Length: 180
Image 1 (cartoon, helix red, strand yellow):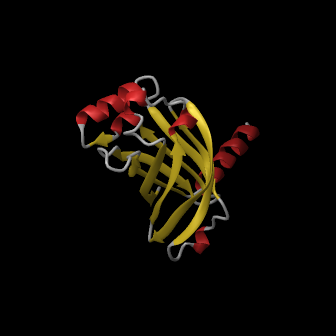
Image 2 (cartoon, helix red, strand yellow):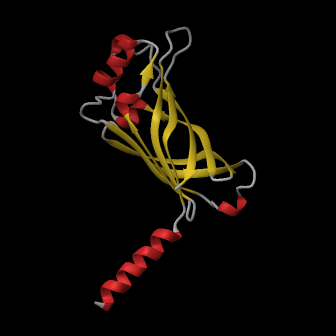
Image 3 (cartoon, one colour):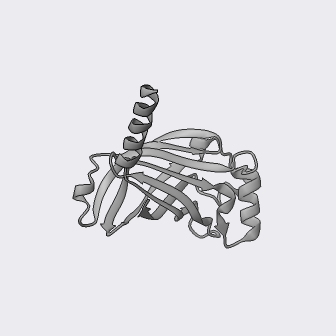
């Protein structure tokens, strides 16, 4: 009985010790456009992200079918032919902000973020992503961008559109994380 009480007390202390900031309305954009060709760009406004303010651990989850394009046909091709979103419905990022400290967040600061990005069933290590953080009251704003290659995620661009879609994809993100 004593062991159970100690275990419950330990779990309670650990769950209250960690400060988490969360959003379910974060934004991720990606662009794989080629100059002088129709824009290949999409946005997803329902991204879930969480930051553990005690240790700088950061994670984000996006449902791939949530990306919206200007062109409905392009969105259909993205989901069926490239992302294969029925087979791979989610993309995730899990990482840690280097040298993170809540005490430093009294103005907008840039940190480096290392982690893994999983998309299309493949996981790629992503290092030194610049993340800008700013804290106001119980809200932390996080934003930044980085580039990945479609080939890193085993996505094949058909020869017929190879000149219209970039091999390099620019990813931009913005999260307003509220204290939980």
